Length: 476
Ligand code: FAD
Image (cartoon, rainbow, N blue to C red; front, top):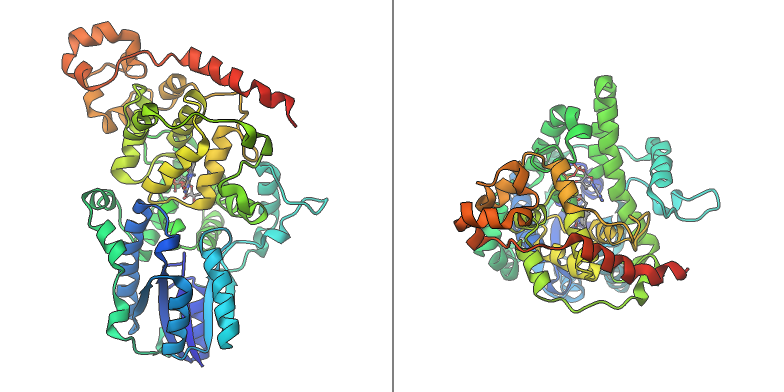
């Protein structure tokens, strides 16, 4: 047998069922990643992908193997690689929803035609069909879904741990097959991407370092601190999880081990597991509602008309709306490729409810700029905030960004970090500077020249939104 281990969103060597299985059989192995430019996500994502593939290649080399990286139309390249390297079995992790699902369908056709065995391994905690209501229907609300998942945690398969590489028999690579695709390398080398990546460490080793630090240290304060964007109170594992540099099954196992060894932290660790369950919920929703990427879960929202994106959207994207907490979030995103969850909710509410823009406008900007841009999580997040998704915030309720800013960034530390031009403002002016525009113009002329001080008229935009969605009340 000649086996191909096909990497997708599982760019790691440990806790990797296909690798375990392949090494246990002692057949010859080829490790491959297929990059199809037609199916790639936003540029931030691609920059990380390039860096992560380099890390994976280095790790494989340290084990005596290498990584084939193909660049081009998946179907043709997959077939070509299977033929050239005389592959007889393909092993891969199965993932619902993401663009890889399309590739997996194509792989099925090619393997059938070439009579190559295809062996999938599920990467989810549990199969979606095993998490149903008493009526046998999919859950549409997070809390009962989460309770059900908690009741099934013992059924989540054990993480695989480290594989036995002493059994490795490699298939030699043609040298030209080991290059990072030029399109990815170009994006990774832009000034913007270099700046984003400079904030992070990529790869499996970095992911575990981050997870271990978080689970032994910051986890104690997670429930209290996770909503405060100036504090690094969350795990910051979302990018590693998105690329599968660390497996969510292995993190769950680490959490459960931590609960056994440190029962005092049990409540905090459970709070963290509940967030991981949101991630499982997002994948579950996409499995049962494959058109969620473009269609609202609550169909009546698809009937609303939306204004064309205008200069207010540009101001939102660049962090110049005049509402400091919104602008700080958008600048954190542009500079680091990541944004705190509380602020993601606020900027999404501002765009969809105060500016009345379609949630897809925001989803697409996040997809372009977030390093953790993940189809399932992003769609669920945007639809949740816009009020048209599952378990959503009511469509008539808006976050008040000033109240939220005063509550979750009371000293303005987060705002000052990402908006240095506002640093001189005292705390009582930093959340709503337009309320003291004339004083600021007098006392801080440099600031006034750089930052908009017009009144965003929160009351008016709130009223307009409520009037606009009135019609939805009549629809079922
Ligand atoms: P932690 O609080 O440490 O949580 C641990 C893990 O749980 C996260 O890494 C993530 O994988 C998962 N998780 C946490 N919260 C959520 C959530 N609300 N939904 C789904 N999974 C969650 N997350 C993404 O990974 N990719 C996205 O593209 C994305 N887009 C979003 C868009 C909007 C409008 C909103 C409101 C949220 C979005 N989220 C997205 C969810 C959430 O903001 C991030 O997962 C979280 O901020 C990542 O930080 P962390 O790893 O420190 O989270």
